Length: 153
Image (tube, rainbow, N blue to C red):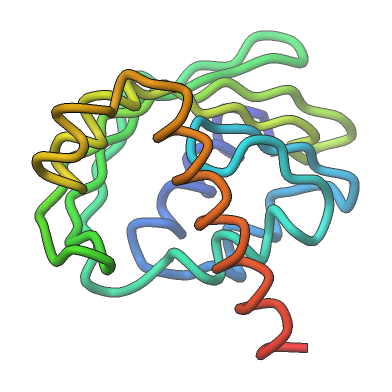
């Protein structure tokens, strides 16, 4: 399978709320990074998707490209943030690195300040630009991931 098709397979699985299909696109030594979780390696990256993916999330993706061992896509998720019940539209630029037909590095870039305004309301408007709030959100996300892993082990 070519790398562009692999990216399309990953996001098609995401759109179907098929975390297992997403994780199947990753190499066992995957390195994932984004503003909310920071850096996740190996099984933790797959567990993050297993925790986050749900049928209530609406996803669209486009601008998929791959050249050599690199690729990328743009995707947009519409969902309700569980902690506040607020609606979020998150626009993400993704980049990938491939090895032997699998994704070995996946980096998502999005505007954390814009996300925090939508997800958190007033606290996001006031503090979403600050490292303090970003670090607090990351600690909460990682704690939630650890709880998920413990309950699914």
